[in-house]
Image 1: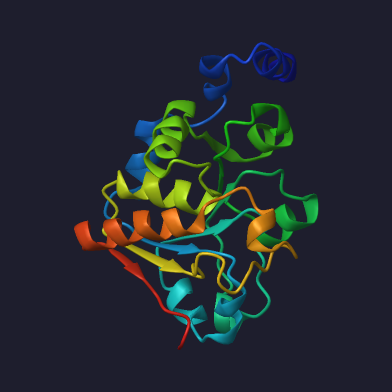
Image 2: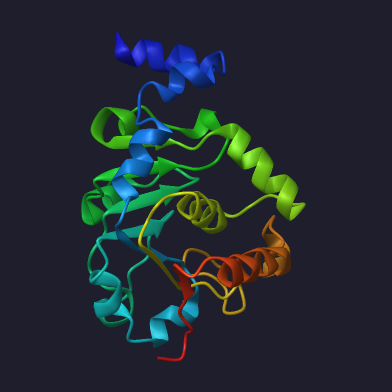
Length: 208
């Protein structure tokens, strides 16, 4: 019956009904309160670093979409949550074993029943996507969406790894910047403003 209710909520684009399958925003933010959080982006340059142990030391480690982890030295071993805008493969979910999946995109039709059925789950609110899109003037990446959400939490510390705004391309695909529907220069400006205004947030360079 729950599966049928889920399918009906997707078919009718009923945001309220879909959200009832997961955590509320209040419940999600309570899990972040006073925690140290590492957000691991998918920049290829991260593979040339030794940030792995530092990543794993965070209370919560959030990986993005296909969550590539080419080696423990650079990427660590720990996955607490996954923030996704595409359905993760069964193999990725089994290997990463997240305790929570955050569905960040407003494209609800791509959300499979296996996520709310098998995992603790959070549906990023459509109005948050609209607000962020308006602020950027373009479609936000999954990375900037999760960073925006974290900035509204009471997390104690927010460390960003593997974000170079597509300068080294992405470990999760072969596309060039012009083939990706995002404006990385605008995202860089957005993140720079956040770094300047929020002392909890630190962007780790890809040179160590």
